[in-house]
Length: 356
Image: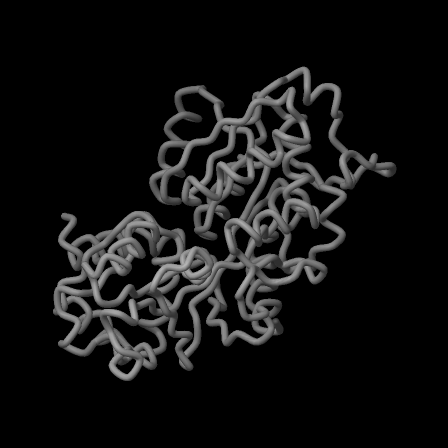
């Protein structure tokens, strides 16, 4: 966990300096207890608004489960969502904002560079959730109340033991460059925030030649880990690189023939970040949802159904998951590089995967 704290502290310090017009705010002095969690939202107004719109890159089944559980507690609030990978989702959001259309209430992104860019565009609404007290300062925006780290996401190597024997499976990252995986290897697309981290962190650890060797294997790129893992289960691919650990846990929980290599070289990791949109059409519903999601109730629903690790110390790891403090995580030391880096990454990655 110390690696997470030190890396994310650098992000918070950078963000605080980059955002000149800091909108300091405080949590309400007397949050109310509603349905087992504390909130500063006006519940009556949230129910009058009657709707919540979430923008998220998460696979649909997990998002649907989260929203369904929230709707069970607040049946007067209908829930909707838009699902795209982080890069495509952010591009859509910014196009809508430029057109004066503010459809999203809550924004979930897995690309920290995009989060910081949105913060610098003054896109987040200032709201300090009473749940924020349970999150370390390193997991929150500076100033506090713009966004919060809602989960930890990490990547390893997945394979089907019915197709690849454990003896033949990769043991560490350099093993995935073996020519035996030619035309049998998948990655995520350039729209993925996690894939950007994997590309950068492994390039720094193993050199530019690492991805040059991967390119020679003609990897296939997919927007979702669902596509990656379905192909592993069906035997269409031998291994999935940049395989999302939470996705593996979900498939394993369902009985799929799949194993995950947690490379000794480390698991590239980063945050899944959540915040309320400043111009949200349903601001009280957005705050109410965020408070529920960041509470142990929402975090437990996420862990049990989306299989993501919570940053909260009082929430156990997802079923079958290794506790986060027992994982060797690779995290960036300078998050500010990812916004300017994205253009180059997209160019290189799309060329490597044959998308453009």
